[in-house]
Amino acid sequence: MPERGFILVQDDRIQILFGATGRVAEAKRSEALKACGDTLHSDACRTVMRRLLALEPHTPDGPWHNLLRESLGPVEYRTLVAALETQAHTGVAEPSAPYELTKMKQGRLFD
Image: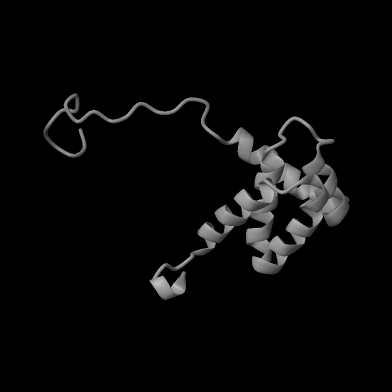
C-alpha cells in the first residue's frame, strides 16, 4: 500500500482491524485480539475492544464480553464497559434538522 502512495492513518487501521476481528470465528477470537494488540498501540486497541463490545450491547455474557473479561481482568473490563455506557448516554437521540439557507434571514451576522 505505501508503494502505491496510500498511507494508513490510525483510524484506518482501527477500522480495518475492527472489521476483520469482528468476523473471526469464536474459536480464533483470542488469537485475533492478540494480533490486534500487536499491531495497534494500546489506545487504538482499546477502541477496537470497545467497538467489539458494542456489537453485543445488551448481552454481558456474550462471547466478546466473556473473552475480554478473561483477557483484561475485571477492573479493565469494567472500565471499557463504563466507557461504552457513557458513550451511549451522551449520543443524540434524534438527528438534528439540516440548515436551510433559504429560511435564514439575510442581514447581520448576529441579531
